[in-house]
Image (cartoon, rainbow, N blue to C red):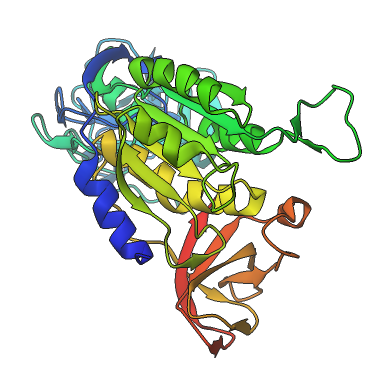
Length: 399
């Protein structure tokens, strides 16, 4: 068996980067950027008013003036007006360009107004540049704003829009097929016998993928029959970038997935990882470069392998810049009895000091799907035997 880190390395060596496509901004949520984005112009592009109030020339105050005649009103989006004299003020709105001849803005809360006359309240002081967001103080034209390899969320999409880009180049979404196997599985809503179980793993996998922004997902269920497995998997190898299988990869007589894949020319890269749960995980590459992740059928094992290996690999194939591993401290001691890397489900909480803790939520075995309710992911613990104390810091893998 190989270690989890060796599995990471082998997966990374085999995956090829997905192609690039140009999409409208509204379709790029969660996508990985494949071009650099530069500032279209200075930001702000003009001296921008930061408060509702009046724009004045501050030199007038140094000469003792506290009251001004309102010359006009300038709203955001209007061309800049020009101050007539130091005796005048221009009513101004947040976001407007600073009028010519003005160098400060007094907030409306600091003013008393009577008709077309405004007076500064007692004790109000005004400094040059007050409440003015100077041109180019955030970024200047040509500044690198977004770098290729970034995953795009709300701030990044807004920045691209602010740079004047209606479309951007991103990695194409992988086409994914999720395939569950097993004669015992019955679809939700269908009659189920005492000796059968519900088909649930595929729903968990698809939901986890959609939560991460993957959209081009199909799913299927296949029985433990070699001819059907070969016939259907051959189609999926020709039509999808990624196959994610659940079940049929252990050592039983009806664990047919590795043999079926071998007959279809899928090259095995590894089979079995030194971990619990999820030891039987299988990974290979199809004749056309399709990545095949065959996950154990026990539901906890399935989600652990998906979060630990599959989802990071998909982001890597999309060209995402490698992220530092997320670390967290465990909130209670955890005993690891076996000489295997061990994954324990956890619930994340923040204490009264603002510190994040991972509270262990152990399962009753790798088939205990119900124990995962309310958990946020798993922590990865080194091989035992050992007891890791409260406060032990280790890697967190979110669902």
